[in-house]
Image (cartoon, rainbow, N blue to C red; front, side, top):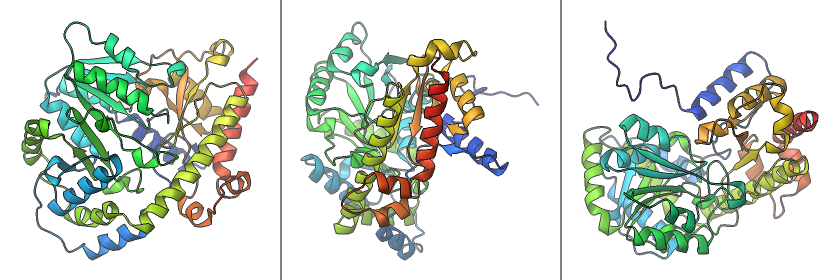
Length: 420
């Protein structure tokens, strides 16, 4: 039978993050010691309040509205509005089966070139490829903390201006985030050029100091806030994402809902009912978040200091649980070993140390650039949450994150051995 595959998807493999996770599991099954820094999944358990709510709502079996359960949408609006100082109604909220699906539908429904600063999350660009969209990449630098400035954005908007800009902060893969000054500068350029901005804030609640700010504070009329439960509630497998549309973009929300009604229909009813408990918050949820942030900050800072110490260029993370490593300091020596790309770098590291990193190429960086992402989540989050006191110091890390420390040390030893 002739294979009539859409050329936009022909030959495409799995998402690099999922492929890396599966490879790591297969190697461990073979008895090899692996340090899983490749897959970005929260190490922390789903909060107990949410687990109980899911059990209470297991009987919910009816189809819910395509846009999402009204009570949940109201709680998402209240939760986000109170944190950002914005007036948001439940009508502006859309619930999806993970924010990834909502992002895909956004690019599907908007026929425009898409502007994406890199390094960027692994699925933004493939979404455009699958849909046949034109994508314009802006390669940021270490000196820019791997972030897009208002000045850089303005310089990219000559000629026919794209309608959609995608930004992510705190960032995956770099862990850095925008300051108030940065956001105001981006907002000014976006407003002048009538851009729609998809602001991916899935890690917002994991800002290490609890100080996340949304671009929507400064550009409310053009910003779609994207988030969900996967990162700040350790609930990636629940597959619940959220979009908050400005009232000015109600036409776009309605269009996406229309397409959703013809594709996935609605998000699982028990999951939506249970998610209400997360967005209602309360003392237990806030304590969970506060402790998670302190642990991630301590781990991220320790790993950054150690890797900077041996000569890698690594920005200190401000949120999420990632470091973006620049191996340019040893580029000349490792190129003599045939390591010419970020992919070959990660393959060699895995082969010789058991350390799993995700190549910079996966984040739309130039193939020859020797960069990689390290996800510092290789520890028992449930145990760490229980044990964390007021101070999360070196002794805590060595007691509760030994695998992570050993993996970073193996990576460090490899770098030092190859810096000749």
